[in-house]
Image (cartoon, rainbow, N blue to C red; front, top):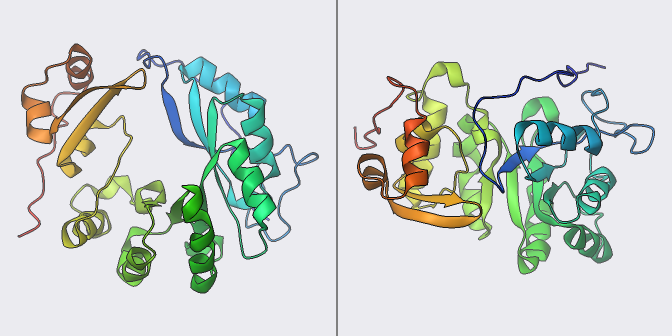
Length: 268
């Protein structure tokens, strides 16, 4: 069975210092396997990277909050995530993986620990699409609890699943930005399928991103937060051309010169 590289034991420290309350919006804990065994049907076995190691990395990088997403190698056994959330004393939130065997008590335990979303894998190397009827049944149970849906799929598969996802009538996130290959640029078809989805169905995308050039490419309206407080909200042109808040001006000043990207024309 294949494995993945272990986290860098000596990560560099960026010059940029995140603001207080900065959140790592997608990260994982792995094991330790002796305490939280990996799923028998997993597609890879990672080196152990438990909650203490993640917390140390966040402290090194300047993050005080995080969203712990259930890794596929743990399957639907969310005990490692629950343990990490409880250990964080409210600093972390979570996204679980569940199936039709989940009980109401399980859902309450997950919610009490800080889980606020449920993740489903559609990508081929992780087993392909789950049973859509199961997702529908689970959505009916988690929506009243205020949970969202997180779908891990390749952007080119949006055409296959978009009607299904929209029909669920629940907030959903396309995980990992649709696994778009960054080196293929912003004009590649998979990336722009995300924009077409937004344009054709009048969806709202919420991106929590450090890459302000990509935000400018995709966003119609931008909300800037500092220390958990909204400091500025306006259409993207206003934000980029005439930022009013000092924090917003500092963020925009961090964009490397020559990296700005023009918005696409979907009518073309």
